[in-house]
Amino acid sequence: MARRESPDPHDLLSIDSLLSEDELALRSRVRAFVDEAVRPRIAEWYEGAVFPVELIPRFAELGLLGMHLTGYGCAGRSAVEYGIAAAELEAGDSGLRTFVSVQGSLAMSAIHKHGSEEQKVRWLPGMASGEIIGCFGLTEPGSGSDPGSMTTFARRDGSDWVINGAKRWIGLASIAQVAIIWAQTDDGIRGFAVPTDTKGFTATPIEPKLSMRASIQCDIELVDVRVPADALLPGAEGLRGPFACLNEARYGIVWGVLGAARDSYRAALEYAQQRLQFDRPLAAYQLTQRKLADMAVEIEKGQLLALHLGRLKDQGRLEPHQISMGKLNNTRIAIEIAREARAMLGGNGITLDHSPLRHANNLESVRTYEGTDEVHTLVLGQAITGMPAFR
Image (cartoon, rainbow, N blue to C red; front, side, top):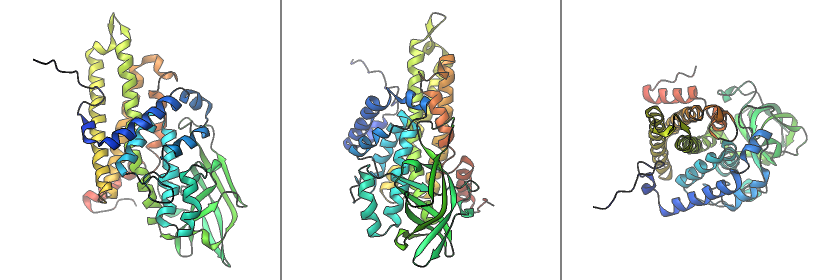
């Protein structure tokens, strides 16, 4: 009788069998990039609070910038492929996946979904190639989960628009060449593509941070920022404009956080197999095996959820409340796995020699941006009961 091979501890449900050859090949390419270019230096970047801008051309070469968009130099890959790439990047660090998300799912998606043909031609090819960086200015100092209460205002002055206000926690703003700014107007909330060298536009990195240290988040100040009429995104009216982009980013998070969870689980498993206590590997103890089993179960369930949502998205059937379920569940389990993995590493787990605590710290930000746990819970509550409970 042929001897059975041991199961793969990272694919107990054979989820790889549900992926196509193209999807597996993309995963291998992005994983190899992370292993070669990210892992050797991520601790250094994290400790020094440095975003590695030198990697931007590599992201572009891999087709990761706006990869799920079509035309204008974008790769036109599937939603599942975008999710797979997000997971591999976040296995390296949440800051890397955040860069791709802000650039592609937020800034580029805003132009692709809501921009004029002239705006698409002007901005998207350079953004896909990494020569132009974008940011997405929605959140304000006084309005995070309630963007409808934003106070940034754009008024008409002849054929121009003049924008005044402030934004906070805006990824990439200090290195961006174009900012998608959302503002109140006399006709409701509208979006604008604002060159960041416009007089009155100032972006200041937020420091110091305990999370997302290998990433850039900024305060933006807008003082009499004057832009021409053609800066207005013609297809975006009301909050549906930014929310359409936020759902793109939230979908990427559903996959991305699983990368951080998987990397934390991998670190704990390898450590437990090598670390001896009382003359036995930690992995030989029942409590350790229970912890590892719990992690594996949650990761596999999260992967099935992400893959199902990705297939729905590729079929044009994905609903916002389904994205909320994915973001709420997968972010919640990822942070629990990272914390448990850190504990399994003992005192060594608080050093940057190991990834779980870095992932856990980053995930504190990921669970907050693009909708907090509470917001996504209420989205699901409304879907279940038919009654909104936001106010």
